[in-house]
Amino acid sequence: MDIEKLKTDLELVTGQRPIGAEATMLQVMARLDAIAASPETPDRLKHYLGRRSYVKALQYLEDPGAPHRL
Image (cartoon, rainbow, N blue to C red; front, top):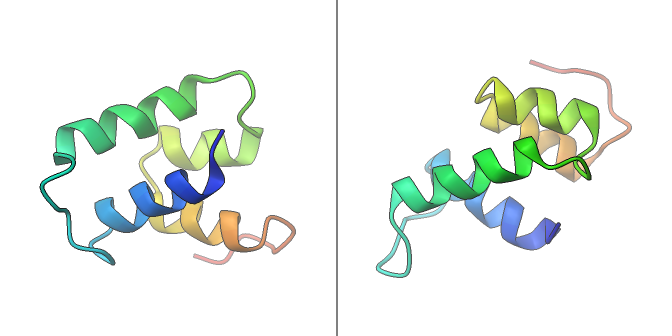
């Protein structure tokens, strides 16, 4: 799992970064769904992605040890 690419995709889907010509929202969502389904994905991150809690997923990537905040 490429953490930087995941962060970028989460920033795109949450509107923190503008989506450009290199990808569509459908492609970004498909990548996030694939990561959520991967057995390598940590359970907490899988939970956030599966529920489409993308802000929480982004916060988790910034600090995995932090308690649930939102």
